[in-house]
Image 1 (cartoon, rainbow, N blue to C red):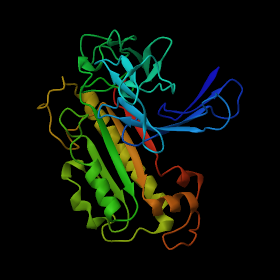
Image 2 (image 1 turned 45 degrees about the horizontal axis):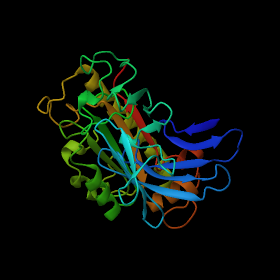
Image 3 (image 1 turned 180 degrees about the vertical axis):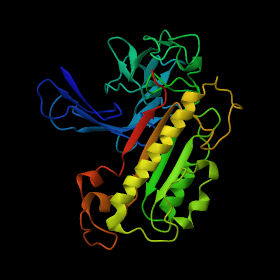
Image 4 (image 1 turned 90 degrees about the vertical axis):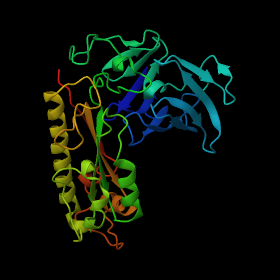
Length: 337
């Protein structure tokens, strides 16, 4: 019997066999997408130490292209039909009958069940041979006349990690950076604002900063990528002992904005054409909203160890709450049954 341990977003973190108290395999997931797989550790014999570490390489549509070892050498490659029938390949692109590494996260990041040959995407299962969901859309005919159509028959450009989202608009991202103003912050703004390929209008990326002197870089965030009413510390310092309270405010603002984006989506359902609405918080509509918190090294040390930037302990830190902040994320679906 295989036991699975999940995150709140239904990402598998660990698998155990039978009555074992230790993991047979463990997974690390990234922040770019809900099925952004970073690596997998495994005990090849089914028990003992997790001696096999393999890193995942995915394409822009989150299909698993290849897996590599710690030295960067390709161990296995994968290719797919439009709806995900996989072909396993050697590093030299010769076909294999099956994965010699028991690699199951393949097409668009979905987990392949070898017995049924179906991909599991949380609420529904996708048949790659039929090119359709096996379960009807629980929300009815909101995305078209077919209750089992997969991403409006456009699988090479669109994804559906939940089996619910359809592709009326796409998935929005609220990305928050916590740390010093400097190269890390400016790189974060550059990487997380601008065009969002998962949104049919290209909008849908929103950025906020939690730091001292945010006024130095606020102008680098394009107007359409700013989180409305997000705290701005201007040219004032952000005291270490006030960070938890500030983080609570930040979460509150991000969640309120996510609720607005979802409300916009619920009030308006289009056919995905590009000219139906403009960018910006008043017009933006999302099928789902992901909120992520990224910390630099100093902020992570403060949150997890209670050590301030001057190297001294900060009173009241760390707490169970502070230890969960860096690297945290939430996913809010915007369609209701």
